[in-house]
View 1 (cartoon, each protein chain N blue to C red):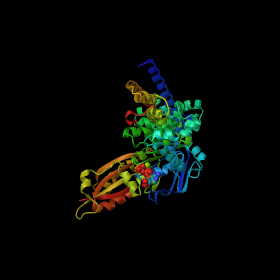
View 2: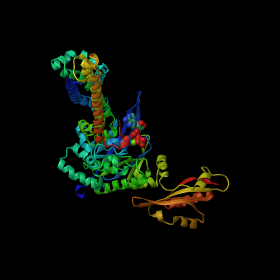
View 3: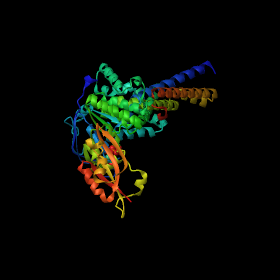
View 4: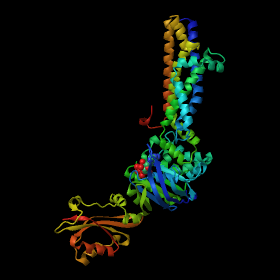
Length: 353
Length: 224
Ligand SMILES: Nc1ncnc2c1ncn2[C@@H]1O[C@H](COP(=O)(O)OP(=O)(O)OP(=O)(O)O)[C@@H](O)[C@H]1O
Ligand SMILES: [Mg+2]
C-alpha cells in the first residue's frame, strides 16, 4: 500500500475543559485545562486510572464529545466548533478502534471493512479493491467471508483496525484497543499498529492503563489524573525520570524490577538506629546504561555494594536499566553523589537493619 | 362434514389469511418507521425530538390499552370512511391494521434498543448521518429481533381476527362462532380451532426459522 502513503495530521488541545451535567443537578469536571500537542506521525499514549478522563479526551478528537471550554484541532480544523457536515468530513480523516471492537454482527469481515466506504459514498468498484487490500494488510484474507461471531478477539480487533483505515484517515484513535486481549494477542495487535504507523505515517493517539503498551509502541506519553495532565513528554524521558507520583505508580509495574520479598518485608521508610543499609534505585540512562559503573564505584570508594535486583530494557532502540542496590547507610550519601556525578538517577527506597 | 361445510371452512381460512396478511403488511409499513423513530428520538439520541417522541408514545400506549373488541366498535365510522362499509372482510382489515401499527411499533422499538450502543458510536465515528446509521446499522443489526417481533404480531393478529366476526367481519373466528357455537356444531368448532392452531404453528416456525437465518451473532448471545 506504499502508493497510498498517508501523512499524519497533528492534533492540539488548548486549555480544554469538559464538564458533564450530573443527575440531580451540578456538573462533574471530567477534564480541566488540558493542553497537549500531538505531532503528526507520532504514536502518543495517554495513560491514567479509571475515570481520569482518558476516553473523554480521546473522543473530543473526532467530535464524539464537545469541549465545554478550550479548543481541539485536527489538521488545523477546529473540531469542537465544526458544523454537522464538516464534522462528518473530519471524521473520515480520523479512524477509531474500540476496546470491544464494535463490529456489526450482521456483516462479514469484508462487509464490516467496507462500511465506512459505503458511508462515505465511495463507488462500489473502488470499494472492492480497497477492502481487499485492507483485509490483506491485517492478515485476514482467509476469513473475509466470516462473521465476527466466528473470530477470536485478536482477529476482531484486526477487522476493527482494517475498518478504521478504510477511508485512509490521517489519525487513528485507539480507546483501550488491547484491554480485552490476552498478552500475546496484545503484542501482535501493537505490532500491527506500529507497522501501520511506520508504513502509512498516520498519527496514532492511544489510551491505555498499561505502561507496557506505552513502552512498546508510543514515542510520546501524557499521564492524566483527575482530569488534568500531570506529566507529558517523550516516553524515554518519562520512563527514566518520572516526576509525578501517578507516573511512578504506573511505572512500578513495568520497569521489571521489584525488591525480593525477604528484603521488602523488613524494609522501613526511616533509617533505623544502629547499623543499617540504604536501599537505592538507580536508573541507568543513555550510553552508561551498559557500563560497569557499579564495579568502578565499588573500587574507587572502597564500598561494598549489594545488588538486589536489576533489568535492562529498551524504549524504541534506547536502552535503560533499573538496578536496586543496598550500601552501608553511613556512606550512602557518598555513593549517591558518585552516581549522580556520572549522570545516573537515584532514588532512596528505604532502609534495612 | 358436508362438502358445503368444507367449502365454508376453506373460504373462512382464506379470509383470515387475507385479513391478517394485509393488516400485517400495512402495519409493518407504518409500524416499522414508528418503532425506529420511537427508539431513536429521545433527548440526546440520534434523531433527538423529545416532544414528538412523548406525544407519539402516548398515542401508541393509548391505542394499545384499548381492548381490541372496543377498538373495533369505536372506530366504526373510520372504518366506514376508509373501507366504504363497516362489515365484511375488507372492513375488518381497518381495525386489525390500526391495532397492528402501534403493536409492531413497540416491538420494533424494543428490537432496535437492543442494538449495542457501541455500534452507533462506531458509525458516528465513521462520519455516518443519522439516516445512514438507521439504514446500515440499526435495522440490519435489529433484524433478528424485528423478525421475531413481526412473528409475534402475526400470531396476535390471527387471534384478533377471530374477534372481528363479532361485529360482522368474516373468517375462521366468525365461522366458529356462528356455526360451532350458535348452531351448536362441535365438529365445525373443532375444525376451526385445529386450523387456527396449525396456522399459528406454521407462522411461529417460519418466523423462528427466518430469524435464525438472519442472526449471525454467536449462539449464546442470541436475544429472544
Ligand atoms: N456522558 C457522561 N455523562 C456524565 N459523566 C461522564 C460521561 N462520560 C464520562 N463521564 C465522567 O467523566 C469522568 C471521566 O470519564 P472517562 O470515561 O473519560 O474516564 P476514563 O479515563 O476513560 O476511564 P476508564 O479507564 O474507566 O475508561 C468520569 O468521572 C465519568 O464518570
Ligand atoms: Mg475510558
